[in-house]
Amino acid sequence: MSHKNRPRTACMIAYANYFTDARIKNYVNTLLKADYEVDVFALGKPEATMPGLRVFCLMPKVWSKRVLPYIISQVWFLFLAGVRVSATHIKKGYSFIHVHNMPNLIVMAALLPKLLGAKVILDVHDLMPQAYATKYALSLNHPLIRFLCYEERISAAFADHVITVHDLAKESLVEHDIPADKISIIMNLGNEAIFRPQPPRREHAGLVLVYHGTITERLGVDLILDALQQCRTRCPGIRFRLIGNGDYMSVVIALIKQYGLEDIIQVKDWVQVEKLPDYLSDADVGVVGMRKYYETYRNWGLPVKMLEYAAMEIPTIAPRLRVICHYFDETNAFLYKPDDSSDMAGCIVRIYQDRKLILQKKDSLKIFNQRYNWTAMEKEYLQIVENFEKDKAS
Image: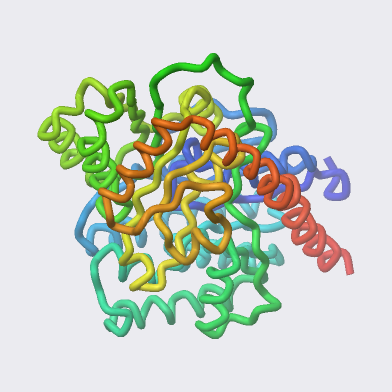
């Protein structure tokens, strides 16, 4: 095949499990529809893919509550990805490399392809300095956090373009001296091809709550359990579906036993993104437990699960945090005082006693989804890619 007729190729690099990461899958599916061939270099175990897509699982995920094991594993992943991506680029000639943080420095795995003419995108899913400050309870002035701000600037400077997930994240990156005109916002929305409203179900007396994603202390799963044990006597038909895993899972299992909630909670390990709606479709309400100290550390993490529930017109019980209230309000979500499991329990009881509240929120979520949807984000992304192609042709 001549170079002129060679298909366009793209590369994704992520220190994440591709098969359970909805954001990366959204990008890949967008590129496949645009007739790109896509290679993904990520974590986990190999699974079946689809025509035009190859997934290279370089190493398993490392779970740890300590900083050093994470840093070592990320450095090792950077080395492995750098070697594999460089070798494959020499054979295939990627049009561009799309690198997903954390860490940001993984963007350096694209060094050789960039030197050979490939464009590079840095996708900032999470604000790394704030994320590490939150995870390890470090001051924003701690030397490690200051170093991570420098790491963020260097990585963004290396990239040809930076993508981030919402307005507050862009605001933070600009505060860290990354040029605003280099940053695009592609929100982490549920892809309506996967996360879409389900047909109305037959009314029932109970209430099904759901949480999916990472199980960790800072995301407040223990607050959800505490709220459930407070309101279960007033809500005898309540059920809670917990989907995911993480470094806090053993504590969560112990709390379920301690509170005597085994009969109302179903625990399920990670499932592929495409299968998630099967576990969410009969849920009445999603629930988020993010702690207040996210704001203390200026960690503007808008819960992906909340956006996926919204795409399915499932309202969410969520804390009144700045980033959440930037996109949601009392018309389309059930908001409670952060870190207050009693206030969360009060929300649950009100919903249990008056299911019409759910229908009202669903109507408002229809309006939300008209404004915020993956179809619009997809067009924004393809415009970035098209600009790369124009630059290469000129």
